[in-house]
Every structure is written in structure tokens, then in C-alpha cells.
Length: 447
Ligand SMILES: Cc1ncc(COP(=O)(O)O)c(C=O)c1O
Image 1 (tube, rainbow, N blue to C red):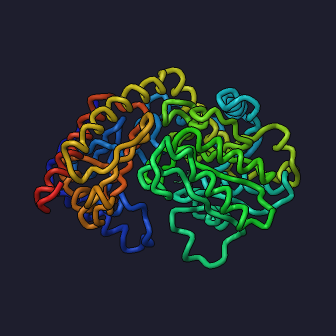
Image 2: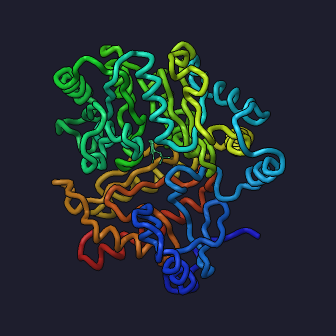
Image 3: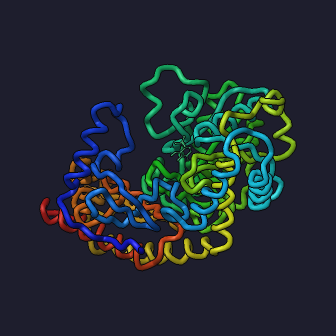
């Protein structure tokens, strides 16, 4: 049976959702992802880009597990591959047929020469491993990230996060966070391209003044996800790589969100013609199964102790079940020509969204590549003051009641639906979002 959305048949959240979340909430620690908390719904099942809650309400899913849900919920070939592997072997790090094939497929898809793969379970774990590798290879220890960047919540990754969550944990490992080319909120108030990417010069200078000369790695998201699906000019990544080179450091592309087709390319570093020393992968890679990885240039991957037996391994990394899941994901992306769909549906969504600033005063910026799309809501287009949080929450709740799941509870709305979403579903999701923004705007006498 094909699930169709939107379909709303109770108040939201409905009685069964309320009952389940209340039961769970008796002992669930706080701090769950914002969209799950804000929605209050409990999920019964999901298919493609449709989520059905336990009350029988169905929602168009434009959140896509924040970039995890590459194939759409419960893709039949994916679930089949997992079922088959479950009956064969699931545990341990011996070589298995799915892992052998997966490693070779990933090496073939990655930029030429970046072809040694190690597997993990979470994104932050892969980033930590990339940092350890960079420290072993360079013999140095400082790590460098960019304003707005996000690389995880572990101690090492906190040192390079520019998204604010590093401030409350006390001392973090030695690191620096440099200006990023977020053109809508340019740190130098300049305009691209006449700016000449001056923010990269500022970044270089900042590092010169702050570093002790011991930079091991510069890490960058090719397009920033957490910051609001921000698309820098392609040259910025080249300049960031130059900064790494000048400091004798490795250049790491964190492709956790952008990798495996999200932007219409296998890896988003391709848009900048940059070959990183190391790439970190996760999210869409496993299409829902917790699997992540590091892909490194061959010579770099030899650095010890990272390369010693048990030096770069983990308990779950690349076990047969995880490998079967990621292999199915990578094969389906290729077999079904999903990247073509990403480009076509992404363009259709962007064409529609780019008409919004003329129609809605709150829409300050629309940006995106493939199915990584950002829409920034501002209270005032001149000052670019973000739309207040409580108003964004109203937009989220209004959308929810219409049958939409989108990250509209903050002013920097991030849209990253499944890579397999069809044009009709994607555009229907956008019209629900537009109605939600317009309704709340009328209520506030703005928009
Ligand atoms: C670019 C990027 N890197 C790393 C991470 C951390 O991944 P995880 O939550 O799997 O640890 C995230 C998570 O959102 C991310 O967006």
C-alpha cells in the first residue's frame, strides 16, 4: 500500500501520540532533536517521503532525518538487503563480502587518490578519527574549523564547531574557528564576487595571529548544514585548502551531510575542484543504519599509531550488517540514478522558492544546491534580524497541522528531503510551508 500525504485526521499531536510520548517522557532524558520534540508525534510507519504517526496522520517529510534519509523511508531493496544479512552474520570486524564490496565502491566514487576507507558508527566518531590521523601524520595537534561549522558533540569536535555549542563545556583541545563565506551574512559586509573572497584573507590572518604553528588539520563542510544549509562560493574551499597547505596541515572535507549525492554530486568538494586529504562520511551513506567513515589518501593512511593493528578500529565499525546497509544504499543510489533526481527535483524546489522573496516579506534569502536547501526568515530585510524563535515555532506548528514536517522552527529553515523524493511530493511540501508562513504572517500583520 502506498502511503499518501498530507492526511490529517486528529488534532496534532493526536491522543495516541500524546499517550506514548508521555509514557516515554517519564524516563527519557531531555535533549532530543528539536524537530522530534517540537512535533510531539510518535511514528507508526514511514514510506518514501511520507511519515505516518500512531494516530493515522500522515506528513510530507522534508526533514529527511537531517540528511540521513537518502533513499526514502523503507526503500524495498534496502530493507531486503538488511533482512538477508541479518540471517547470515551481523557482528565483528572480520572481512565480509558486503564490506569488501563496499570499501571498493566507496574508493571508486571518492575523488581520485582518496581511497583508503575505515568505518565507524557515528559522524563525530569519524571526525575524531580523522583528527587522530592528521595528528599522527603531521606530528602536530591544533585543529581548525569555520564559523557556523558543525562536526559533532564529542570533545575533539567541539574545538572546531563554529555553531555555538562549544561554549559551555570548559576547555576544549587546541583549536581555532575562522570566518566562513556565508554571503547572506558576510562577515565583512561585502558582496560576492566583487569581494574577491576577502573573508578567506581574514581567515588566513586570524590563523596566523592565533596559531602556535602546530596546525594538524583544517576541517570544512563544503556546504554548511547546521548553519542553515549555507552555500559558499566554490572558490572558498580552494582558499581554505590553501590555508591548510600554508600551515603544513591536512585538509579535511566533512561530507557528512553533503556526501553521497545530496548536492547532485557524489561529493560536494567536486564543485570546487578540490581533492581533500581526508573526507569524513556518514548520514546518507548508511541510509538510516548508523555507519560513518573516513576516506584518506593512501600515504596519509599509513601514519602510525593510527595505522597499527587496532589503531583506527572500533567495536561496530563496518560490521557485516552495517556494511550490507551502506552497500545497499550506495548501489541503489547508482542503480536508480538518484543523483539525477536530486538535481531535477532540487532545481524545481529552488525555482519555486526563488519566487518567495517577491511574495513574502519575511523571506530574506533562498539558497541551495541539489536537495540541500536553505530559506532564511527575517523580521526586517534591511537589518536581516532573524524572525523571532516563537514566531518560527508557530510556523512549524501550523505546518504540522497541515501535514508537513520541515525544520521551520528556526529562522534558518533547512530543507533536505530524501534524495528519492518526487517532484510532486516536494512541491506539495513547499506549498504547505508557504501556506504556514503566510498564515502566521497574517496573524502577526507581517510577511
Ligand atoms: C557536517 C557534520 N559533521 C558531523 C556531524 C556529527 O554527526 P553525528 O551526529 O552522527 O555524530 C554532523 C551532524 O549533524 C554534521 O552535520
